[in-house]
Image (cartoon, rainbow, N blue to C red; front, side, top):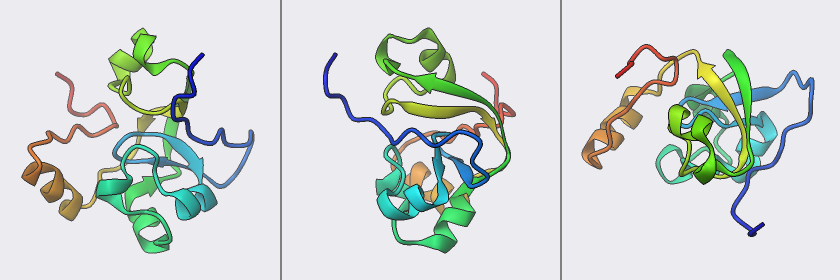
Amino acid sequence: MSDAASAIIPPTKSRHLRACLLCSIIQTSSDFRNIGCPNCEEILQLKDNPDRILACTTSYYDGVIALIDPEASWVARWQRTAKYVRGMYAARVKGRVPEDVEAELDSRGIKYRPRDQSDQD
């Protein structure tokens, strides 16, 4: 197996787990604060920014998916996480990214798809 980038696997039964509203990776609040989001940091800028962490992550999510080999996983393709790092992902998150993040995505030509499955295509 290659040394592909991977996220920190969060501890089980932690009350401090949060899911990124953009990519749905699950990490502890302290991991988001210390390393940011391993998939979205360039856009979200969560590292060392507690207010941004609260705005761009949520503790309200359903289901947990363990992605070990995202590029080969049909679940990763279905969840649109095949290009992301290995780690734990929420099947569905509640909430949307802030408007400034949506505007940034739009300016980069990236279509925002909420992870709450409200925007099915």
